[in-house]
Image (cartoon, rainbow, N blue to C red; front, side):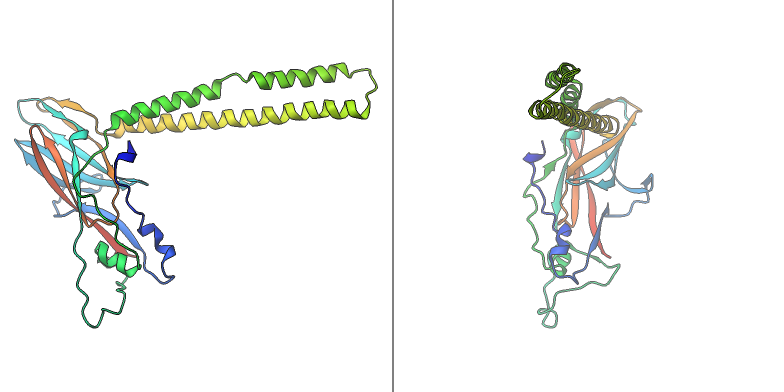
Length: 282
């Protein structure tokens, strides 16, 4: 599912490849206009369409995604379908400032604590600006990913529980040679052969046991990821009159953007909510 989307260049992560004295920046997202509305300490952007209230707030960055929380309130007398796959967002960027005669030859170095645009940050780190997607990007639909994670977890659990017949055969062969050697005087070649069978059985079964543990751990991690998406992601739901719903939305991450316009569906309408992506000099 991730391969369909444009993968952003991790240009902020390449600071170490630039000059040693290049500045670093801390990324964050906030509503473009302050609303004074908060949820768990996060400021929310707000929009109303057909009496339905929509609120969005930035939650966190993941490795390849940016996470928002959506909240719908339906005070109307009609039902409303909320579908996360119908959300879109558009990344934008402010133009780079035109250098004047005094600073043309210098790379800008903002002061610590200063908030700068993507263009200024890239210039200060001597990094190129990657292109932004040319059209709005859809949110990730959690349902296919939940199904895929569960299927992968089942396969890993099956591998962890699979009986290892080869390991049993090697163990039996080692035991048989040990029993056969009781009360007999072995030649050096016979002893070495028996020791080799024993060592092979022990080594193989140790590797097999470790592999089973790896599969079991992988199954647990995948199950936890599926459970997290199931519990926290915004999933398609029919919102009855007087009801409200909240959940996470996942979009591809674009570190080189200065802002996002999130388009939230409300029935047949779409409402825009604007966010600014800020970077503060550390």
